[in-house]
Image (cartoon, rainbow, N blue to C red; front, side, top):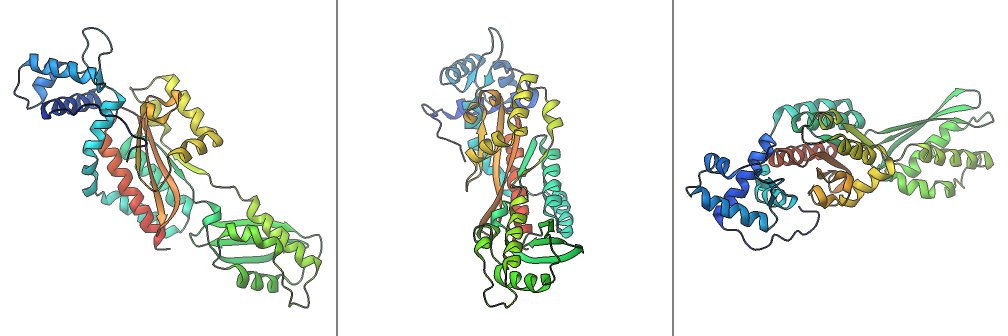
Length: 347
């Protein structure tokens, strides 16, 4: 679950763990430093305030909480948030949300992958108040179901490629001559590449030869080269984004934080680097400084993937202030990534 190992230091006793939980929950809920008096009032710990203060000093010494200034209460550190989340993440296993499932199933009927991902991003952002970034399926992993070639006007042809996920790629091709064998080319191309991954086709399409056809000539070779360019002209894997307004309106972030987030999510290369750094087979939650980026130190990022059977198609990232309802956000992420995988596995 964790992006990297974090030293938890000496073991905490049960009372200290309860105090830490109370501080984290109170701070997540109200966004203000938590005093020993608040811990005493809002927990079921039957010890004196002096004992609680001593335990809070120990938690501070061990790096789980800190005091922003003299006479203030305590605030959880990244280490304290990590300890809290690692302890409560199992609460997400029994989560279910029927309304989100219904929205996703309705979108799936449309067969438009981008629409499905937009519905997912919007639903996740709305219920978690986070900025949602969903990676579109990588083009190379899509399987071709059909290629259609149709004349548009003299010397112009429309090429449509349909994939297993319902993703379509369309392009207009100018041949420079009156090409009359497009139906034969369409049939033979479908026989040759139907069911193959686009990545495989892109590598081999230029060398494809239809040697047994009496009409094969340089014009056909040129057409095959054009079809290869149709694949390559399509935009590579991009992202669906939703919910930046929740970040802007957050009371736990300042404008420098927001500018830093925009810097890393609007620049394609930086976003690829950020998502790629933490993507993998396991779900992850990366808290504050664990991101390794100073501009994002006040954020947490929740990472999961969606699949078609065992094939990972893309990554889902939820980004929010590091003071948020971890169990709720993590539960919704796991639930929706599983539902999204179900939708694509049925295609």
